[in-house]
Length: 391
Image (cartoon, rainbow, N blue to C red; front, side, top):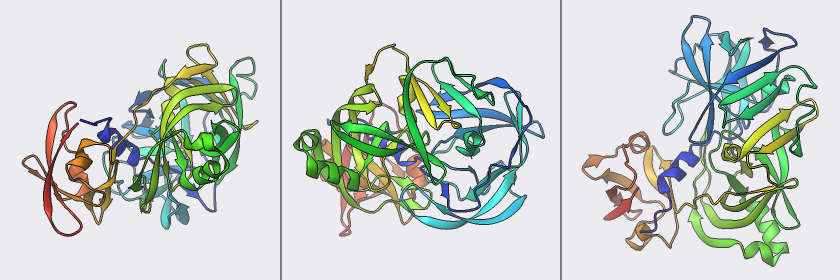
């Protein structure tokens, strides 16, 4: 069976993406300490960064730290009070779709020894799929002028307002610029080619490349095309306001992905219609210092080398919501499911003996690694078909 991890790509499809507010951006929230250094425990689960915070009423909540989001984000019918309204704002998601959303102040909360007050967040509907956190902390946490070091191996984030605190630390430096108040870096996916990329800890995919950017690089160089593993039509990235449009998806096997003078070798990637993104999966290979005062990031590899082997899985399938239903968003023609008849656009009706009435039911289905599942599908012509797939 060609089963390189289709369920993992579902997880990638839930990426938070760039919640880039278009106006009224503010870092006027308060930080209780001055001239401080605080070590804050973090969790790193499925290539996502989580911080447990304590609300003013003593209740514990779990926040996701997402550098691809310019400000905070909470959810209707969630566990965070959304009554302190500030007005409305125009917001754009990872796929470039816009909507007008409500803006609130999150009630005061404490992380580590620091208390954050008047933190601004947008309010959106519950996202598609699984969500095990209560709110998002955006890049405004650092844009306020706080420096941080993210060290997932030691499960900690060091946060400080001392501008020279990390001055003596070594590593591989790369500068970033703010576009829509979130950090964009220049990395090199191909020799003599540079790609402007959002550093987005809200996405679980190691690296995904904007399709238009890929086409420009491929037009200029044969060595780009030599790293293409395959092509298909479909869509996989789900932003806050819906899935990206259907288009050609290119499956890539990059010889190396350069971060300044550091190289991530053997990186599987693919293209999307949204902007290029480098995700939190890179933090498995080293700690990262972010200095917003100098707009630079410093990568410190755990292996004390100037390269590391990634060898992440390439994915053959993705599933997206279509009119509330779970549908095949992308399928590669080399996998067994395709050979059995699964196609992009098929709607999932049943898995084994369980009805799948909506995308949420699919996202919460209790899949077990290594098990075989029977999918009953409805194609776009109205015909049913049966396909077996190994998780």
